[in-house]
Image (cartoon, rainbow, N blue to C red):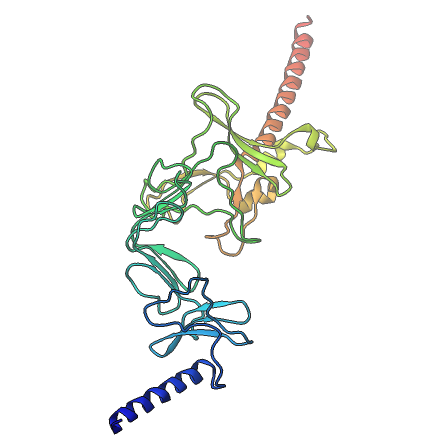
Length: 342
């Protein structure tokens, strides 16, 4: 046997021993099953890859851990500095901050995305550059690239919400000092409209266009349709809600005589339109029931007047004047009788 042939056989034996030791962890015993090899295996049974002791299983590429199955029943995907980052479908790259990027493809059920898809930010928000989010085949919720959000219905550009029955939108406020819902149109023109409400019938009464509740669900006011072409602005005045009901004992005429009816212009009105009415602070000194006091900043918390609450006072004045007129009329009648002897 030649020396080169002996060397080749020796090398093969050494490689075999080294491979066996590597697979067995250095203990010299044979592994429990065949190796996982490049290009795939045919085990003829379910394959198992993992650890049998209390150690994590890592997957590396480019000599860097990219995924880990932890012993704490957690699957960690991404860099160690960013504990979660995913890439689905075709194209794009994982967000450098570890966000979720979904792009490409055209699934027919569930979440439907366009070519650009959705990118989640570290703050937990998401934006759609193009494409559509369709939560189910019936279009229960759709967000498309025309800046339209549709839930239940798709009638117009903007936000469309629809349902077969019951309230269609329920908005909860954020606590004291915050608004439950804010509607803003900041285009600052004479056509910068706010809210359009369609309700009621084309011919009839009774529909509640808007209703106001306390937190305990007690109704405190409403705007209702009271004819085919008009609405009524209502506040609660039910006898069943009131107690200690009695006639107003004040002198309404004297109170009204003390009211200052002013002429004025608003400082912020560039058209300098003239107005006639009350100054809230002055009215509060005479008839505070009609005034809502404001705060320090007159732009965000001005004093305000509810002119409707002056109405009962004016009605009382008319009644007092009517009584006085009847007294004068009776006195004149008696005086005529005295003069004429009739």
